[in-house]
Image (cartoon, rainbow, N blue to C red; front, side):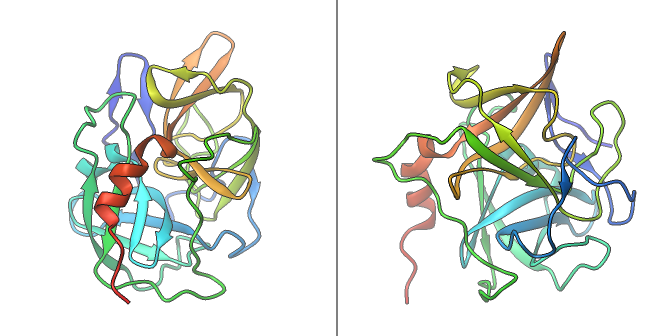
Length: 240
């Protein structure tokens, strides 16, 4: 298993294959209503490492995820409209564009993936909105979604999508100006990398890392609004 670590901070990447465990991901969460989160994307290396990450659809031809997933996803395939990872649809190949300033530590942990075949939007595949540059205020009532582990200290990956309501207690930046830290005994764990932090129906953050402290865990999310210029440059307006 290939896990990226720095100091005491754990980037939430973990290799697995569908069917490794029947526990449901995200510590303390509950099972999502099937296909109620149609923007969620399951990403897996198709040839060698079998590393997996979560992601979310931000345009018909682009998925957003975490940059630290890049090393393990050298031959990525993107799966749309997934509920149970034991029953994956046909995967779509994609080209990866990690933020060049990412240095395998907290901060700049964002990556875009351009689908070689654009998604067909329907009831089970949909786009989630990104924040506006002129409205950087984040609602404190948020949602995290993913197929990650149900435990912090033992990797037990999910086969079905799970979600958890979280309340952001402190929006002060931590480690780096583009990181939101939130202390909570429950939340994303190994395998939830790249999933969205959704606040007010908008994807405001990307699951990046967690850090064990004496009184619980701190989860770090990459703040998407800090990278909108780079996002727009990579995506560019698509031709009709």
